[in-house]
Image 1 (tube, helix red, strand yellow):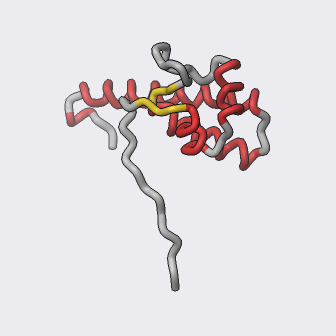
Image 2 (cartoon, one colour):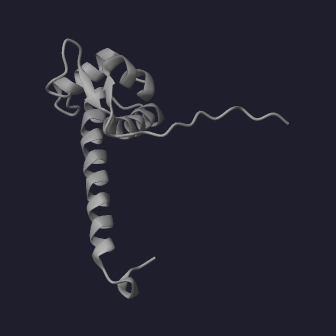
Image 3 (cartoon, helix red, strand yellow):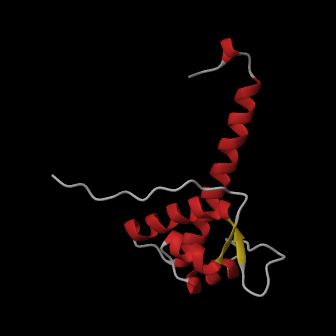
Length: 110
């Protein structure tokens, strides 16, 4: 019984990632990522020159959006909308966790 190796890495969201690296991580082409930038769904870092660069925080939502694109045969415009919603959900989850941390322990739900 053989098992396929599993690729695992720790993502530091403060890092900067280039367009080709982001494309490789997310399973999308650089042209598709450029189109997401054109839709304002993906925002490059402003000081990146000469090539576009991005915050590594885009890796997780882009991977999820890319997987859903394949699973549900979505067009790129729909992926742009989906990406915005995934980022919003992630932000709301972080805010909820921060608020829960402020609650006294006897009031926290598990």
